[in-house]
Length: 298
Image (cartoon, rainbow, N blue to C red):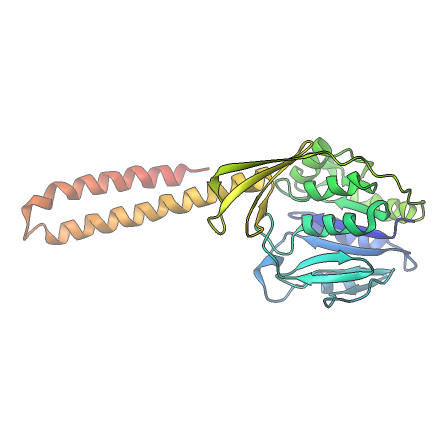
């Protein structure tokens, strides 16, 4: 039996998740664990549980650390904490962010694969970039089932498309079809098959972690590539690029602020010291160049 279902998504996934959850039967013989990258990593209160309870025939729970896993239950993360699995237990962990978020999809998927192997069904819904792909690949490596929302059915196609590109996916479908599909898959026998683990290649990169500034190591296993720092911050390729672009834009605007402030200072003292007069226009010209670059940055 496939009695562990893990679901991940981001932008556009909430609508798909509600549709999926609504179709699950009240006697589902599996536990469902959900992580959506839609602002849950900011702390405070999450409304995901409340939203799902309105549609679900099953109990929707925000678990405590160490809580036992119960079939027929949908588990949603505690805000600003990873949702992880161990043998017969749920872990609520405030570990390093992955892909700039906490909770994150990959830690949930990896922990499910580690402890439940072929009993796991991994589901990727609508979302941006390539979150969750490494975790879905690990589920497949350990004999589990990979399910992906049809890109044409997703609000954001990037996560489904990257899952299909890098993972040997077993099933695709619409959000409307997933309730029936998952219900049927739960009843199928979980074999003990496990794909041979591909060697892990490690390369120390000459770039810094966008979050802590530590050195990054690239980890490649087959077609799956991630980067991770010593602290534990981890990034998929597209998320790392996105983080670097955001940092570059931030630094450009910081440079504009410093240049314009320097021009104002030079202007104030130019009446007393004519030697700085030439600096005023030079600083303003440089500030405009950087401002234009920041404005066009994408």
